[in-house]
Length: 301
Image (cartoon, rainbow, N blue to C red; front, side, top):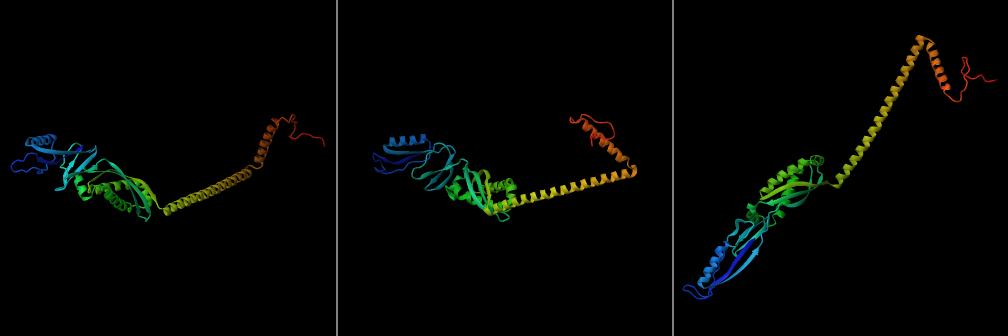
């Protein structure tokens, strides 16, 4: 609570030696209530008439006030939360919000490979309480509008220029950390504290986006073509291995016939006949199998 007690004028109702009726005397100052009421009581005892005006201004939680004096300028004292007395017409208060406040700063810059990059940086900031008089004197009440956009643009351009478009995506955490460190150091010179700095938006130009999409399509087509080639090669290897197997089998059969004679062929005939007889015996359409060397039925001519 910022209380301003103002004594507008004081004059004697009865002239005294050295004083004239209606003579003005300005009384005021920063003091406690006991001093103020004692002063008023003294004036009453002297026979003076007092006219007092009181104005109350609120300094809410998380706010600070800087005092401007018309004779001495901006005071170095920062007024905190509570009740204070100021000299009327001579001093005035400038209220600053000292909460952590967010701000989004959009920046368009270029990467190492000369690609346009659209970045939105989110900053959570607050002023240093002890440096509020200097901030008000050198920058003004709208210090965030004057300082944050300029230093953010400068830091982002200097950092992003060291990375190409691909690295900005794959190494985004490194870029964000480097931007945060440089920005915190730069903001401290202006009396600002940055509680958090983060990259919330990162996009590239339309031409680069189209080029990336075309590159992805070309990569997919190349992968498909490579798959077709690999499949053809596998089929070719399969055909070669199969032909080699048949050739080896024919060679083995030829060698067996050369060494064993017709015995192998007769054995295969017997195995085939045995298998055929077994299949016919299991068929429901066959009720009689005549004896003899022929497995065919004796049909009349």
